[in-house]
Amino acid sequence: MSNRTFTMIKPDATNKGYTGAILDQIIKAGFTVKAMKWTKLTEEQAGLFYDIHRARPFFQELVDFMISGPIVAAILEKENAVADFRTLIGATNPAQAEEGTIRKLYAASIGENAVHGSDSDENAAIEGDFFFSKLERF
Ligand code: CMP
Image (cartoon, rainbow, N blue to C red; front, top):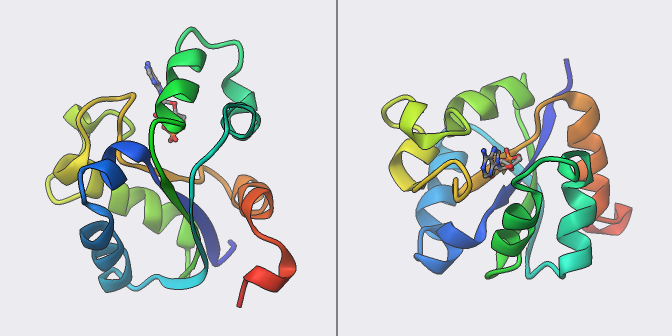
């Protein structure tokens, strides 16, 4: 069980002004920020980040969405970080997300779902390394 996960606040949420409220909810849930970056992905970067979904029918839609505005990338620390963060954000489809979860509160659809959360310890490490050098995490 690792104590770190990776998240992105996605362009739908940053464009609607939800960044502060989402970060507040994450920190109040007990996560500590170990690295954080406000940036805008290029099409190539978004494609590489979601490379695992390249064959899916929604891939281009996902890439176009992910480059439609700025994102916040962060590495978060907490005991049982990956599982607890996925509980905090709720189901991928906000229509199926529990009341009070970040996606229930701030997401509009399965594609535009406000936040990303790593699905395993291995992917948390890979995704954190995608955005942050050793000098950028504390
Ligand atoms: P995320 O958890 O970031 O990981 C993969 C993303 O693909 C997911 O959130 C959604 O934003 C997106 N996604 C998954 N399923 C669909 C779908 N059926 N249609 C559009 N986008 C999807």
